[in-house]
Amino acid sequence: MLIANLATYPPRAGRLEQMMSIIAPGVDRVNLVLNEYEEIPAHLAKHKNVFAVIPEEDTKDTGKFLPKADKNDLVFLVDDDLIYPADYFYRSAEIYEALGQGKWVGGYHGTFYSRFPKKLTPRKLLQVLPVSLGKAEPFKNTYHYSKKLAQHRRVAQIGTGTAVLRGNLMPPFDYMRSSQKFVDIRFGRWCAEQGIKMVCFAREKDWIGKIAFPVTIRNSFTRHLPQEVVAEIRSYALELPDMGKAHRIEAY
Image 1 (cartoon, rainbow, N blue to C red):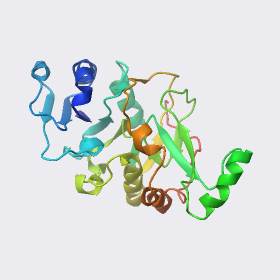
Image 2: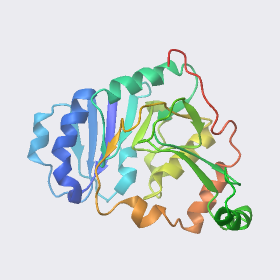
Image 3: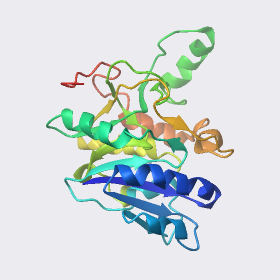
């Protein structure tokens, strides 16, 4: 079964109906977590495979980890500010299945970290010492979902708006609960601890689009991570093998 998990909240309600018209036809079931809603929107009733819930607490972006899945389900984690193409779920499922045996997470927004930058500019040279002393976030190398990626690549993090994995690899909600606003980092830690490998999938430029909302996690939190979050990155992301290396998938 193909399942899509999404968490949203009222300021983005105007986007919800359009988004369901794209997502619902592509999967067998949509688990929709409605943070801060007082009632379930009536327009959702036209999608028989959309199952909405209003949680007792505001789960924010961790809500996509709240619904449970069977071990063999293929779970897509999606965000309410991304525009998914019509073939997103079918195509992604095919690539994921081609990964073969083993524990895998795939996706389209991949990140890995390093102690030194790829290019040592004067500005980045000033950052090397704080990074090496553990006082700054390690250098971030990102394969952005909107950019072309010619080859699949091994990464330490997959953005949880573009992730796909088996139900038995999903972290428990209690593990993710305290990671509001940095779910990608906590999810990456879970995968590292569980021996789950992450692959950023190849794609064309602008295959996935974005809706520009005035308030996002990136501009309100991610640009300046708290020290405890930086420490979490360093706890798992700097010792992983094959980061940034091309990963061959048969037939893809």
